[in-house]
Length: 206
Image (cartoon, rainbow, N blue to C red; front, top):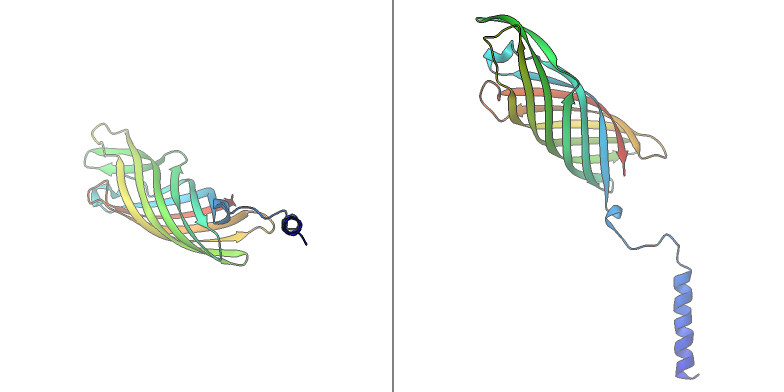
């Protein structure tokens, strides 16, 4: 058989083989290794100021929305990292009684931070320990007392927590809850606190 004819037949066979490969075969990209993790829902932020002078000035409980946006690896165990945030829905008031007279305070809390997590996929259920850092902001105003002016809250906090969720079959949605505890990095009246956060959330994977 002439060499040119043999080469032509070999090339035809190779092209035919490629044509029979599944249409789904494609070059690997980042979506094969990672996915976006977006979650959010109602939350309760329980704040305790550790400085006695502020215990009766700033409210303990704040209701709001807690959410996350992260990037996770794919597989039986997902390694995740991203940003998290909380905002209270309106201010929370606290009646006060001090040496300078009575009145009340109104405080609105917000926070933004970062986290890392390891998420185990146990069938329909996921379980995820996580840790991170939040910067917590509190806008404090005083009503009916012109002599008292507590400072606004502005301090970082390290935290750790645990979340669990249940997957909806045949979708990329999950319903879950998370619980975390944090401790501030500050040591003054408006920078020394601990907190607990509990949140229910709906998660979407992209």
